[in-house]
Image (cartoon, rainbow, N blue to C red; front, side, top):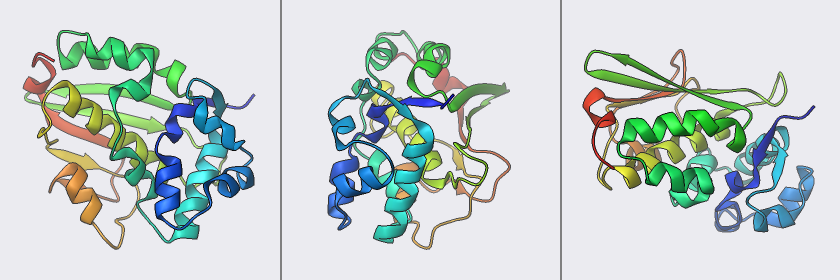
Length: 205
């Protein structure tokens, strides 16, 4: 059985693809997805095809940061009812715990874990590849970018993580990563994660 993800994961795909010189409809069809999925955010679609679409789009456009560009304009509302519930929680901790509880409803190929150690918190995002040889760079950067955007909407627009770690290698141009995450970016790490202060978790939303 295919692992599924909400079609809302492709929010901003049409805009980023068009700005990158691609034909969004053709790219979707080539990946085995109907262009109509962009109009049905609650539709569940195969995560393997989403990964194929993002990877092909990055390669065809020459844009290493394609997934991250899609994350730049995300809102909590793009997470549907779960995003609205997150907004209504008292603290960031409550919001993240709620997200972990309902994560499978949003993306069956992504799991979250919060690891606290003294004053530091690690928010780990573990991505399951749709197939054994599928590159996951675009999906990982999209997922971490969406998480940082969500935290900013809950806490403050100028919130910055202490560090953001990626398993994959650095892109040639770090400009967009610095804009999204700040200076604390590391590549070729053991796992993908966002590192922040423990006190952030108990700040009121």
